[in-house]
Length: 221
Figure 1 (cartoon, rainbow, N blue to C red):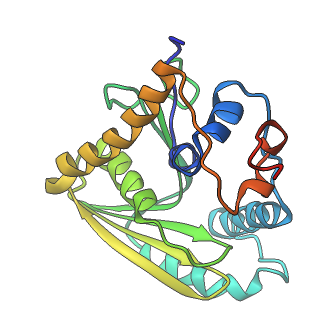
Figure 2: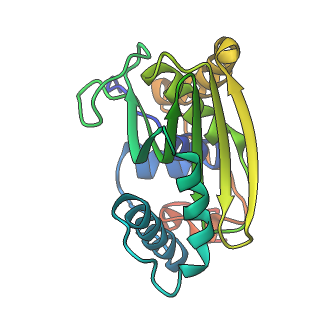
């Protein structure tokens, strides 16, 4: 195995939850996650919110309760730059590159990005249960610091649409060396599995939902 892997928050989490699933889905591409009703709903709501903020499309009945979220974001974007579904990508040298370029190594999609002077605001819409993992927000902040070098502080939030709650964390440029160290160590564990072709199963209550469950003895028990 010599091909360079590419990474994202979701792929890192997949490996950490179960390396064997990662092997079948990300490396060998023997299976694909076709999504559930919940993920399809989430993608639909994301698009509705994007259209509301980008072109002023009225929210449909299933999402009209999120209008206040949109008006709050609009109030934050006065005299600022607003980006929606912003795709940011780095190569292995931690240099910005194109999303589809051959050296694409670390990808992130930011639902909402606001740039104002030396401060950035990042929001991630969530339609599922409230289970914050600040690693995702930290990765988003690292992407922003590289792509927008004038930024010194990134204020991030998960917006839990179903519950009307938020979880927030602020990241500062002076802390990025430590942040990168932690993230790169997690990615290195994936690289070591790749080099040694060692992807052990990690059984859990999620096995029955895994797209690779027909290839794993743990999911069949």
